[in-house]
Image (cartoon, rainbow, N blue to C red; front, side, top):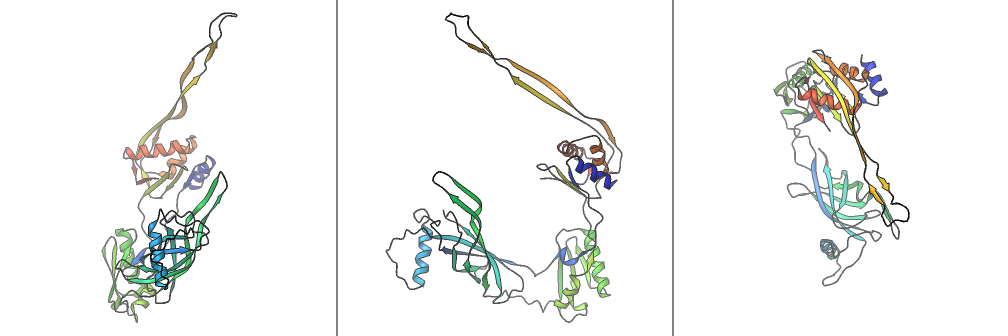
Length: 369
């Protein structure tokens, strides 16, 4: 039935995916380890070396201010001077400080213009400190920007591809300060499920206890499992996590149907069920056609040509599906296969599924994008 359903779906232009049974997944792909997380960094800097595509300092006075500060730090006195270059731009620099990053570790940064610069292509970011939410500096960024787009301009036309006002610097920042976290001193650790579910949490508890051969994990709620590190018998929390993150668990999934109205895609889970319901669907098409008629005056008369409006209107009912009954307990893949066999278009099928959900017969979470 599943093979027939997929064959009919693609033959009629419907992209439908009916996933197979859930396979065991590594624990590291299901949970987040409490305390093991990245931190966001942000900084305000200056990009130089642009080919006339920088900020207009009249419209972006903050660019002139930061440029003055940079030059004065380098020993250049520019007090009272007027700057009007077009090769500099003020930018915001963002990055993520990964967990356990040590001093000297390179990290990637993203650079985005905040003024009226038209492109950052070919620019160089001047040394910029990156701050965390606590206001402390944790990294310093500098380097040549790889812009994500291009702009071409002629005398009367301009074309832009991508976003030239934003770019990246791979390994463009260096960690200068480490986040204080005594990971080695932990005696217990919480596993936070990315998708909270009581069944999945219970399976994680059982799988972790089975891997150590003793009760070391306790399910606290649908989204949290606590592991007693001291009871695992490992030399350190790092060794314990090295074992825990590779434990295989079969996650439990909620019944869910996701449809994309733009592309006509339907993605469904195998646990979706439909109660007994009857479906009838048809399309009405309204057609209005304007056929104006020109009325000419008699020869050698003083009359004028008059355009007489004439319209043709009609309503046509396209063939749809008659009253079709869906038996109780049917899977959604069987329903879609049946609708495909009746020649229902992908757009109409999405409308039918939405209506079945509104009637309360579709027992699944329905997501429309």
